[in-house]
Amino acid sequence: MKRDDMILISVDDHVIEPPDMFVGRLPKKYEADAPRLEHQENGTDVWKFRDHVIPNSALNAIAGRPKEEYGLEPQGLDEIRPGCFDVHERVKDMSAGGLLTQMCFPSFPGFAGRLFATEDKDFSRALVQAYNDWHIEGWAGAYPGRFIPMALPMIWDPADTADEVRRVAEKGCHSITFTENPAVMGFPSFHSDHWDPLWRALSDTGTVLNVHIGSSGRIAVPAADGPPDVMITLQPVNIVQAAADLLWSRVIKEFPGVKISLSEGGTGWIPYFLERLDKTFEMHSAWTMQDFGGKLPSDVFRERFMTCFITDSVGTSLRHEIGIDNICWECDYPHSDSLWPDAPEWLHADFVKHNVPDDDINKMTHENAMRWYQFDPFTSVPKEQATVGALRASVADHDVSIKPRSHHSIPAAEKLAQYRMRADAAVKKAPVVR
Image (cartoon, rainbow, N blue to C red; front, side, top):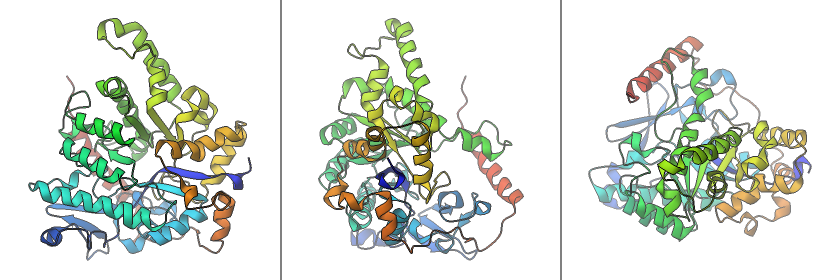
């Protein structure tokens, strides 16, 4: 297959929420207390909600910026590419990058929406529903076929989350973001029956549970004085832990309709992981009492877990050992791992390198995503207009050049100091294992 003939659906991108997202979406009695974006004297923009202040980290919106501007420092909306927060500009960026469709994770509320937990249950519910309605109607709904809608949970209440899953499913949303590890967030683990209402709702509606790396708030930082390269390299490790935790949980055995996406975790590690699962089962199931109904754990993994990659040459070569029907591609726009706008070039190079046939390419680039999320973009975008080449041609004059955007230059030493402060806090927060 030629590069320009590929059709790309990305199952992991991110939205930097626009300042007007709550306008007209909350009951009037809550409008004054809604989260708001405020411009600071230092030129940055931060979301404020009660006692919480959430800045926009530079690593979260690097699309179109030089690598020298990467870092953890806060930034203003006028320092980032408009496609990060403006849906009309986002669609232009997508087309210029050859992307037909994106599924966008939240930013300032956190991956599991915990920011919206308040002492007023009705207010908390209203915030989540307002966010989800904005995302489904205002963001994804602005361009049918171009976005797979995704919903936030009410993580503090599994019954309310279940109701929300059913509510948004009626709107055509079959994707919900969640935490990779509720236990470290102070909630019951995946092994309890606490989340059963959620599992039933997911099963009933065919909604996919998406667990993104870092969605528990914990990052792998072995030592606070290590360089940030260590943390960045180890980011996918959290998803390996989540995969094991969920695979061996009662959820998989008692709720056969639940399906889970391991977002931004890569794929190259999976063949060994599956081998280890089966070895563990063979050696220990007699006393751990694990039973998958006559199946091997690796078989169950391939049936119930979606795996995702940005660029993964090893995973591409081992695609059939992983499971060709549960691999999806992701772009990660506008985060620092993203290869936008050159993702098609990187992806196609690996397909050529490993002689990947057209059928396998189609599954990994769009068909698997369509099936998992019950999403058909071709009802809105004709297939001949959905290819990399056609999309790029439709916005031929759109500027995707790399440009400096920061209003102030921060020395590398200061950026490292900022990272080490955060790393020190993360290490201190980590539980002690005895």
